[in-house]
Length: 149
Image (cartoon, one colour):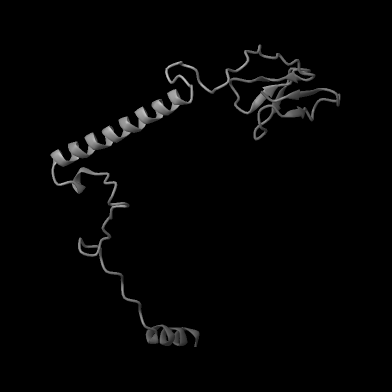
């Protein structure tokens, strides 16, 4: 009973048409973001126009640079003094921290295992991040904590 009803239901429903296949006519075309600032040589007619646009941009940049230097001279700042506004860092010696806890040594032949520095037995530390303080569950002394390398 269920099978004939489902066949009847599916045969009466309309199938969706498949989407059209991509052709060069219906593909989206990339547009220029800003026509005032062309970014490809295809937007210029010739290489000469491209060179002219580069020269014009370089001339504008040089004019801005000279105007800034003149303003700095007028304000009493020497643009060629070589000074910067960046504060030099204070040289400091590295601080050697003495840890209260020992660090375990990795077992080279067994990845994910380390030697317990207290008992020198293998401990499984897979999935534990480096630097985490742990305690060996097989060690009877609760004060024997160590860090994962």
